[in-house]
Length: 238
Ligand SMILES: Nc1ncnc2c1ncn2[C@@H]1O[C@H](COP(=O)(O)OP(=O)(O)OP(=O)(O)O)[C@@H](O)[C@H]1O
Image 1 (tube, protein in one colour):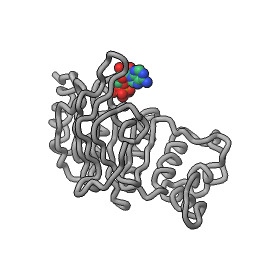
Image 2 (tube, rainbow, N blue to C red):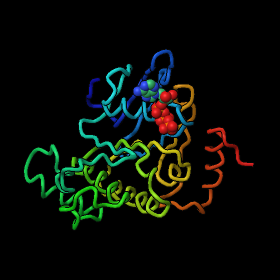
Image 3 (tube, rainbow, N blue to C red):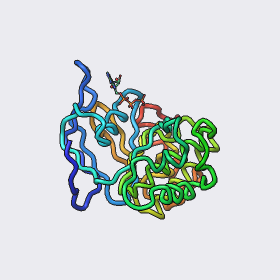
């Protein structure tokens, strides 16, 4: 699927379709992400969030429709997907071209707070540290866009919170846009500028989140947005 300049948008998806056998998962989904915008993608289990993200990441040759993403994008999955036989720094530097790949990898590791763990093996890291390395591996490519599929889904609540704050700091510093697949309504509302709900193979709801950042669950307006989003996800709050 083609990658080309998207004009004023960082991502433009039009008429995205994907079926598995007789099961239609994406049925003409449309969405956009603006420069520097964080868009959360929510939806019931099996609604097609990962399928959509994989199509955007160029990992699904069978999805059809128009997909425009920038040339420089990074992908972070729920599992870190580090190569166990390479040291942390070499995982981050893997495939980098240009000058001083290891120096750039070290700078990215330092940004995620792991400047001293470059010589470690992935198996020596905690789950949270491994996800930080996965973020560094995406960051080192100076992405205009991060595609994040439940990146903190396997982490404990405290580590998850720290990772959310890290992502927010990195986004402020580097200005990348992000499409964040998450099950966590609070995570969506803490990080995103817009929350999209995927239902019936399309974006069925779009909720702008205009609360000032950094955000907290106690902020005025947060609870109302949470109720609205949960309601749309089929979990109405009494
Ligand atoms: N490779 C595949 N072969 C067959 N069916 C698939 C394949 N990948 C996904 N599906 C089906 O497509 C549907 C959407 O899956 P997908 O993983 O995109 O959903 P999701 O919204 O990310 O779900 P979850 O929130 O549970 O992770 C599901 O019914 C799933 O079984």
